Length: 310
Length: 276
Image (cartoon, rainbow over all chains, first blue to last red; front, side):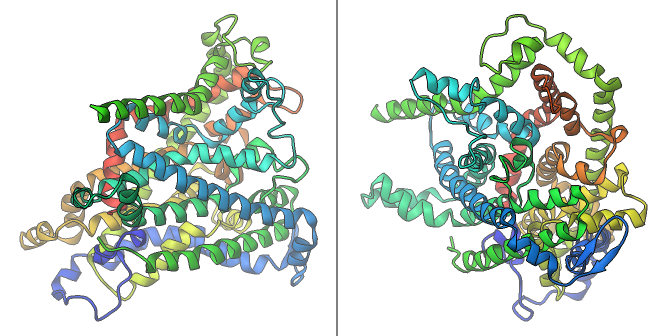
């Protein structure tokens, strides 16, 4: 999160040589480089090395028995298979919608919970609750609640005379139902990040604006929103990264179904892995890697460039 | 006094909405876990006919030869091992990154961000673990969790360390402390609040993780708590009451942790991660 921190914490941003105040040489010896090594070793062997390996194996037909180089075949299979293009589109929908909703709702809840309202302590506790239940637990619970016939949601709708849909059984709805659950689960964290950002805004600005006669809405639009930008950046980046890679919730709730209506890249990758098509699965990994990087990196650069200074 | 009224009305409304949106699903879990199998099979949101929570708990524990107990032990070992390695190593990295400007920092930052962004490649990872002889071992899975969780921790620590004044470091240096003593005796205590944040966040994440054990620790004797949920779901039938009892049981540890450290999490997040 450091790079998402504002530039005033000078060390947190990537520094350019020559811009720093010179430090005495003996001080550097107190912070030896080898401190980085043990962590770096684990990280390089178990994360970076497999990532590099995946760029080779994505071009192979890789089974339990042998590895054979087949060029771009996996990727061709990937994009000609309708199931796959579906997973590709769904990944974008899932990532975009979940992070958009988390920003709007998270900010709303954040503002509400940093204002002086009644029962604030209770609300802060309850909003964070879903984070504690495991994804699998949440998925199973909502599977039951979204049951088309007896599920609590449709029971409640039936009460007011609405015939509830098959939330997870209707191919057009399944993905959006999972999106709703993901937002339900993740909005607490977004709100927490926003609360941290909101608390840091100096009250003087609001007082000055009040003196100038700015309305509550104006104060929100012209003070809160620009100054809470670092938090927005954090929420966008974190929720997009999580959303584009989401697997557990989808896997538990629909298994990518009905058919492959709610398949995303991550679930396709797992399915191919489970079928033993290791090459195809790894190609999926590479596709996901490209998708996530192509979205996050420009966004990251753009958001950090437009930081507001406090 | 109109402001006080608004405050209470908004608060009251928020409480109402939160109750429907957040409390109902939890009430549902609890209600189902009190029910008998037949009673829970309808999935209806109703008051239990008979209260059999204790029997359910006993049954859940007995299932598959006390698999849940094994799973709890496995999950506890995994969580403690991976989080302690993760926190110490990440704190060391964050400490040096924030305190010592160097040409390597942009490179390291790039890798940290890659760790956050890049989706892990499952098959090659399993293959590398296999050749190291740590595939399908708790220790191997713990190292995986360390590798995947480290980026987040390093960023958290680095942001925090850059806000700590250096005077204490300098004083300790003048008193003749070496780098290791400086870090463990000066740095670590200063980092306490953010370390607690990292421990809580990552412990909950590791304990609740389901995907990585599924990939890298297959097999029943190695089950972690999340995988026990599949004991009560089969292709033909789901015993909902036992399933929800199990969910309830495996949510207790994260819940206890959260209740204990609630304030600390918020404090750590506010002081470290995002300074407005």
